[in-house]
Every structure is written in structure tokens, then in C-alpha cells.
Length: 497
Image (cartoon, rainbow, N blue to C red):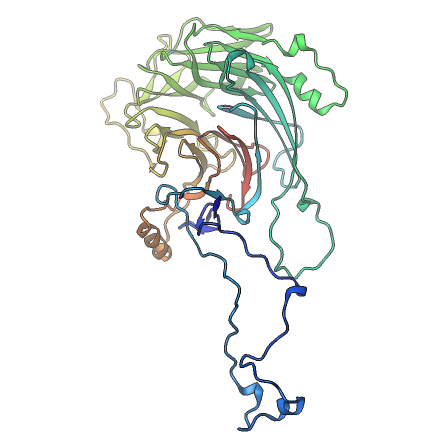
């Protein structure tokens, strides 16, 4: 099978895209060892008479040091030339695959699973924030899409020994034998605990030890996964199956209508969970000292399936939703009519699949549509219901992805950066703070000539997964991204973010 090797592509912003193409069969050429090096030969293959001839010069009196020696031709085959692999422009040939260039990654690991997982969440841990050292550790919770309903599970994964990606140091002048603990070449370790789950899991969300699952059966289950985490961390810990294998609470408000939209919020010591279904209804469930209390009256303003929900990061009574009716709506839970108070009708020309509310700059919201578009909205311009003001325009709009946007999320600490994933097998990282530089116009023209313009705000393109479903930033490991697709999980950190 041929490979298209990946190498670094400098985008107009000066960042990297890790997937480029090379000639078929792009094997890396090995650097010859000292034992393989041949002895130096005279370029003209002349026989040197003696050392004195070398010192005194030839018949014309020219000293050898004054002669210009022609370049020595390398008889070995040169490695195949690489050109940029641009998604949406270049097409892989028969039996060609993409191979990652690890020079653009600080860390990159992949994990296969028994059944595809449409959704997952990263669990906060007690190992500290702003972690930079390796090896890294991460905890995930996910749910499966098995072949039959009874085979599905909720799984908690503990990933350890996530070492820094090894780089080729063959050209390094540093011959030190000092061992760098951050760069040990060891395999990562995966441990996990599972609990049975009837029906496929459409969505998983945690807060912090409570995990909610949107089941394809139309039910929303809430589990206490603390015992599963403790069993991973405490040797000899025995799980009480009666406690952990059954949901702590099940929300039946949606009847048999399944859904995908869900978001947790914490306030005043309690928890609030929003859930939206394919029949355009949104329900609110709140925690009580004795359990959970689902409110009977739904929020109704959408006219089609509710695709995503987000609580406001600054107003605990406000949330946003998006729908297949092409709109983004803003709600106030105090509204007795359970109607939205503001909105963006026609936010996308097709279904609005996902939204994310910026936690640092609370008036910014980013949305992703079924047409592959990404739009950033200033909520200060959103029209209130009943207003005659024109529909607001996005402050930024990108059309890089060539298939539906499946997930989108702002960086947890950098207000201008967000990640997105699409059904076109791409995870993209963006920075709104990047502006086009006139000095980079030559590179931009080259990329346009290749058939497609690369937005200067596009920092990085990660590929290699099939049909990416969801992407999240790790909240405690700066720059670390985790994504899930039909063929498993990737966890990586780039050198550009």
C-alpha cells in the first residue's frame, strides 16, 4: 500500500497543517551509518602519485587547494519530493493513505475501541491545572453505538504514560546520554471500567461525577461514576454493582423521542441539566437534596429538531440553542411562556448542528452548520423577539470544511481560539486573532493557485480519523485536544497552539 507522507505546511498565519502528500510509496530514507560510508575518491578518478605531488601541485603548477572540485553526485535514489496535501483539493489515489508527520506534534496518540463512540467528555481530575510535563494522564467518559441495544456500555477510560512524541534527533549535535523523562519511548497505558447501558448513546456529558447520557431509546440517564474512577485509582477497590450499574435518575420527559442536545450547569450548590429532542422540545431538570426534579413544561420556540444547547457562562438564567430549523435561539428560564427571548433566524442555510459559548468573552458564540460553514456571532447584535431590526451578520465566517460540522468548542482559556470537527474527516484549530500579513501574500497566492484559499485564521488541520464526531479541549492540559470518530479516539497536542 502506498503512503502519502505528511510534512509541515506553513499557513499564512505561520502555523502548521500536518497532512501533506508525497509521491506514492513515500518511504523515509535512512541516514547511512559510519560503517556504511565509503572512502573518499578523487572526482576525476586520477591516481595520486605521492604526498609530494599533492603538496607541490601538478604540471601546471596549480596547487590542489586552488582547484574547484565538482559536486559529488549521490548515486543513491533521492527521497520522493513532497508537495502540500490540501483537503478538498487533492484526492488520495488508489491504495494511498496519509501518514502523520510527527514533527508538527508535541504529542499524538490513537486509541481503538470495540464499538464506535459518537460522544465523550473529558473528566476533570485532581492532578492539577495547567499541566505541561510528560508523561500525561487523562480521564474520559464515553458511550457506545453497538450492534444491538443490549451490548452498549458507558465506559470510563484512564489513559496514562502519554509521552511526548518522539522526534528524529539524528542530526542533533547533542551526544549527551542523559535520559529525559519527558521523552521516554514507552507505550501508553489504557485502563477502563464499564457499566451496561440499554440502547446506543447519542451524547455524553459530565458534571463533575454525574454523567448524563442521551439514549436512542428517548431516555436521559444520570449516573454516579465516582465508584468507577475510584476503582481505577485505588488498588483493590471493589465496585458495588448495585450502586454503579443502575442510573441514579432517569428523565422520561421526552417520551420516545430521542435527542442529541444536552448541557450541564452548576449554580448555588445545585445542578441543572438541559435536554433537547428531535421533536423541538427542550426540558430542564434540576437537582434537589434528595435527587433530581424534571420540570414538566418544555421550552418551545423551535420548529424542528434541537441539535445543541449551551448555558451562558455569565448569566445562570440564560441559555442558547440551535436547531435544524436553521436558527439559534436565546432563552431566559424565568420566561413563563417558555419562549425564546431573542434569536438569529436563518443563522445557516441548513441545519445548525452545534454551538459553543465563549467563556472568556461572553458575547461571542460560534456555530457550525450542516453545509460545513462556521460562523462567529456577537450576541450584542442579536435581535429580540418582536424586533424589526435586520438579521445580524456574523463577525467571522469560514467555509473550509466540505461536509457537516459535527462539533465545535472554544478553547478553555484563549478567547480567540476554537476547535471544530467535520464529517470530512478533519479536526481544525482556528485563531480569530490572526490577521493576514501583506508579506505573506506570495504564499497565499500559491495556495490559491493550488485550487483553494487557506484562511489565515486556520492554525492546524488534523486528519487520519474517519468521520470525526466530537472534539474537546482538555481543561487541565493546555493545548491538548481529544477527538472521537468511527474508528476510535485521538489525543494530541500541536506545536502551534
